[in-house]
Amino acid sequence: MPNAVEPESLFATESTAEPSTKERAWGALVHAAALIPIPGPNVILPLLIWLVGRDESEFVDDQGRQSVDFQLSMLLLYLASIPLLLIGVGFLLIWILPLLNMGFVLWAAVMTAQGERFRYPFRMGFIS
Image (cartoon, rainbow, N blue to C red; front, side, top):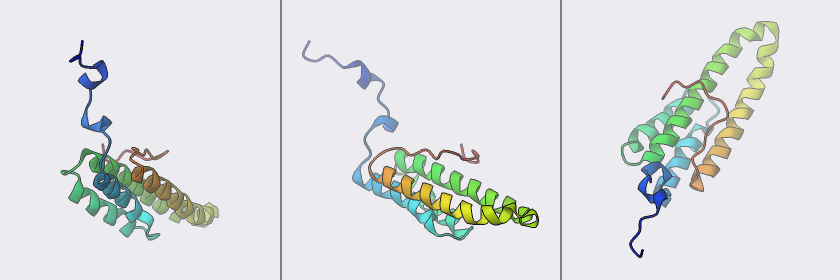
């Protein structure tokens, strides 16, 4: 049948569509904006970019949710490490958390720039 529709195309949604170059750039930017190693701006900048782009693109909305949620999770871990400074564990966390954050953010920005939907290995699910 020349006009037959393939079964996969019946269930295609925006989430399976290949993101455009502009969407990939905005998706990578929403992750890369968190590279500022200061708790606070590393949440606010991705949040602002996500709020600007979420209505324009489902891909940017998805990646913005991932980025902001991960940064909120990291901020909570930073705050939790402060009282742990009293027993010495906090010093280790104060050094490890920024390195983990930077590594995951760079990985997310690169993967998103390539058009893949990045999922952080751990996040607390503040934004659904």
